[in-house]
Length: 222
Image: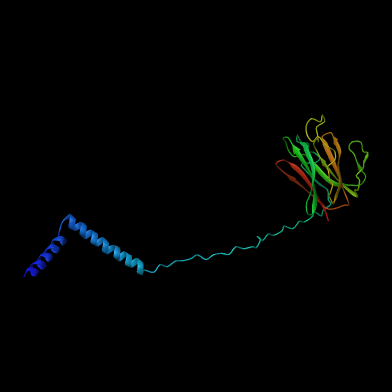
């Protein structure tokens, strides 16, 4: 009988614990938390994790493809004028004269400085020997079999030598294939002329560029 009473008392004590207030809630929350943790752990343990791996792109050793631009040499030998020549006197002055090598032509450039409209210009073949302006004396162009004269209607420099291109009167052309010599052959009454001595008569082209203003003469090579 004593055993029965003890068993009954034990069941009553368990019932009281299950129906208590804060302590019971705390115990219940703890039990629920333990049960939830167990369920989460079980779910985590039994779930299958799928991992997606991005495809690896192997580095390439190929060089970028570039397309070479064909160089077409000028072919015309016809004289050219521009800038209102022969009535194109300008307030600009010649600031520089230079030459350069390109794949299929060689280039002579006259650069202008100051303010005003581009001066009149005239580019043409002339017979050898070239004549100086204004003396009309022959000018020696060593190695030249033909000559192009470039005339611009501006000073290079001004009559007093204070403004504009100070010289020299030749442009270096060492290592050039077509250009043999470039000489200034006149700077008189607001008009400047340059002679380009070349190996033989070849096609040439002209163009005007801006910022700064320039007159460009390209002569074919090859």
